[in-house]
Length: 37
Length: 319
Image (cartoon, rainbow over the protein chains, first blue to last red):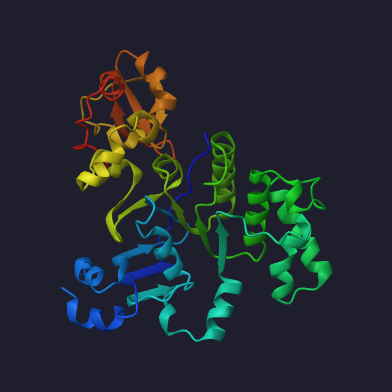
């Protein structure tokens, strides 16, 4: 059985995403300002 | 969280909706979802192959979205490695030349880049095929070249977008084993995208399950199987044989002062299936030990029988 890697904690994460949104379309940015709930 | 309906009515499509998470050094996060769930879009946002509409992304503490083109090129050249489903090899270059190519772009001399490429060929087990062209290789071999090429620049972060999806099931399993072997040696920070739930369970330290751009659940494979957060996640986990996924530590009992153990010891990290037979032959409690052989729990054959024959109500004890 090949074992999985072990997570190692560091001072800060290597990748950190905060409320990431991706909207496709021309009006995306304009709409986003008015529709975030 | 944004209201996807309003965007749809305005002719927009929400690819990723309010994704927040962290990936630690050496961790493998698998992003799993069906076609159109937003998993590849999320990966493309984090590698900045696509621009995000809102939110923040940090790579090693640095704000990715504030980087200029020069900083971004440097980041991709030095820290990020990418592997794609369609291999994306250069057809007119040999195996060695394909692997050496990103090094040459980075400024390595031809000699140094070829020397490094030879090491990579060995790492991914393609010895003897150094001078083959991509068309002369099988799908699995081509993806090994793709993996070797992405590793040649020694990236800290490895992005893999459905790297094994184009391979037939037997080769896929082989490549997963190979991938786990590589990760046990290299210990990269990995974001791995797949639509295959069993692949996610097999490879991941943690899994993020996506639907309609939203992360439905982000947790360890054991917790996803034992405690699905939504009905959608439950559908994926319903048919999963628990003994093939769960580790002993997920179902072991705590040690009590009355615990009495036979001679058998099992590792807390052992997948249940691999030790079930041995535990079933024991009359009493079996000791569960950690990496340092310290006693951390206890497991009885009756618990294994519950898992193997259908009692899935084990969530009270999982970690």
